[in-house]
Image (cartoon, one colour):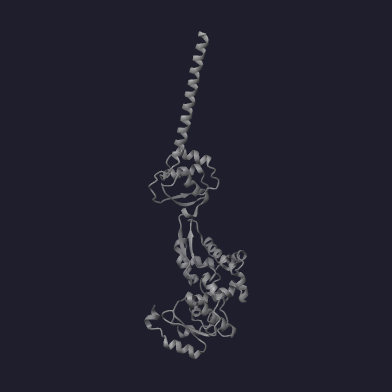
Length: 363
């Protein structure tokens, strides 16, 4: 009996030690898990100040942890390294991100793994509605780090334009006519473009604009075909309407131009004459109005060789849904109001009753 009692005592002691070891292991494991999870938390939940982090091309998850740690975005480097290895981050995207210390490590890695647009460092470039191609080149040269002269050289490169013609359905050999001043005039969709990389080139920016134009024209393809115009002719008329009238009057002005085209008349548009001289003015000189350029719609019947500025979809819709009126003339007063007329006599009366002052002309 005494021997069995000693054995039971030893066995009980052994079980206690096993239980203690299990408790210690579980406690250690639980503590490790808590330590690990805590280490993946935000470096500072109250700090939302943006920190710019550039992720180079080809960066692996471990290297990214080091970059983030250097910027104070990692609460526990060891925990982050483990998560980076086990997290399945297989599509990490190089770019420049705007992050903050209130983000957890998994949140940050998810942003980088998906290239989340919301967190990208963005610089905007605006292509203005109604801007001529030369004006667009001037406006974007600084952001692209290329002189406007070099930008125009690229846009006038026939080999480059032919490559674009092969890629975009709406670009045709019409833009390469010797009469067209600039092949891509009117084809760079007017919009604000957000650049998310420092490696933006003239070519990649041009494609951004053409992609937007592609979307706008594709959506209206059937309607454009119904007008009887080619896309090039359609954009040409749309650009003239854009320069001639504000948004609220564009459908009415488009109606006048449609009437004049049907009658075989010249469009009589001063803005096309301005384009010849790359100017924006109201008081054209007699010598300018008598220009023999094919863009001079004061003298030449029909549409000019090509667009005269960049356009947006609203102007396209105004041309597609032009106002069906009986007018053959219009005159825009100093305040932007458009006065329509059926006869030249009525037109001259509108001009005399709403004259532009020297101060108006100077603006």
